[in-house]
Length: 125
Figure 1 (spheres, one colour):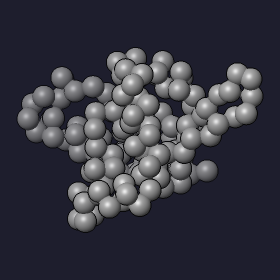
Figure 2: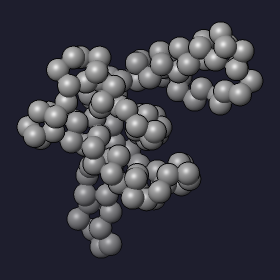
Figure 3: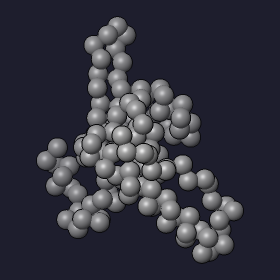
């Protein structure tokens, strides 16, 4: 993991954007907030993502410590992905980004074109 950390920018905001940047990372992480998911479940929840990209994004997030991968020694074997505590700490950030995106679209009179914001704060457990 040290090699990956060395590749991350030194500026904190830039580092954060690098960790969650990309078309699918936020969407994948959103689906892992509530409970662990198998690869096939994630693929079903995000039909527009290719299997290759899904696996690549999960691996990157695992390297950055925001997603964990658990392999079950069963026949057939199965793997579950879940958000780590570090990954879960991104939830308020993603909620704020979603709200800002809505504000930005409204300011530019593009709110009708905007998809619904699916990230909402969860009640404290």
